[in-house]
Amino acid sequence: MPASADTESWLRLTLAPGVSDDALRRLLVAHGSPQAVLDAPIAALRATVTPPMAAAIKDGAPEERVQATLRWLSEPDNHLVTLADAAYPAALLQLTDPPPALYVKGRAELLARRGIAVVGSRNATPQGVATARDFARALSDAGLVITSGLALGIDTAAHEGGIEGRSSTIAMVGTGLDIVYPARNRELAHRIARDGALVSEFALGMPALAANFPRRNRLISGMAKGCLVVEAALSSGSLITARLANEQGKDVFAIPGSIHSALSKGCHALIKQGAKLVDTVDDILEELHMTAGARVAAAPAPGAHPLLEAMGYDPCDLDALATRSGLAAAEVAVLVTRFELEGRIAALPGGLYQRVH
Image 1 (tube, rainbow, N blue to C red):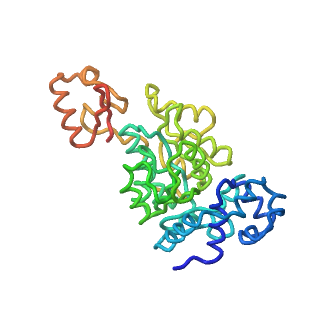
Image 2 (spheres, rainbow, N blue to C red):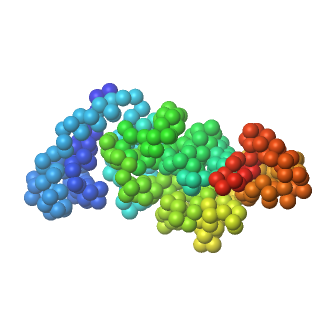
Image 3 (cartoon, helix red, strand yellow):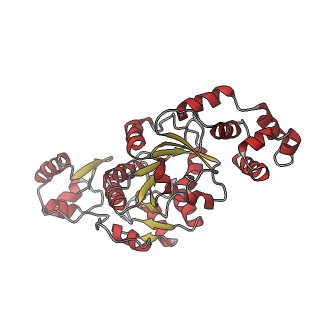
């Protein structure tokens, strides 16, 4: 379907090179609509923005970019949602810097539904991945859209769990929607485009620049009622999302882990700073004043086999496992191999193993 004149004017304004989002918002307040901004004399524009920005608007957006975006918008399930649209997420209007326009691929109606951010480490442990997927699935079944950032590790598991649940998932990305980053998540991105929604404030063609990802984190937290951190090192970017959620007045939840794991230290720091410690989904639903759903625990109940009970959920090597279990080293090696093939434990770097189920 051809784009409306209003959509085209939004594109011609937002794609003008070198014009900041803050300048665009000020221009819209001053002139009322994108077309009015485009039609304004340059002297009037200079009263609101810098001369270079005013000149860029009068020179116009590159025609090839406008036409390429219009072609993209003509494809099924591709949308441009602007500040003037009723479909624009009300939660983002509470931000000090809401994006003037959002590019959406997939189910745009998800933007209006209640959601929760689920984030964490890119280098997640197998147990962390399983926990993120289980929590996301249960939260999705409880009526919360799962919002995350399409990164590897916890983000990936959160999106997968969200899709498996009834409320689906939103991936807030740091590139244009014609680019999938990281490339390893291409298949997942296609699933989200079909069953959920991919969302970006960045125009088509925007590459994966480092500065984009901390910026998009404010939208991950801004879209949600709360933010759950599953695993995070002290340097993790997911702590930026948690901090932004706290600054936005959102609930922050953190799942504790082993005191010996670097990927637990970020969550423990959040808990010390006032985040709610959670080990079941009910903890989150109660805080959000929602009906309690399936009771998913952060650590699955211990298995019946003595080796798994001795293993616990901390990473350990074969010697430590033999000492804990009292089994012969050869028997431990056989059992570990069996349980790894069954997906009940996972091999970690450095000759370590960790229980998953």
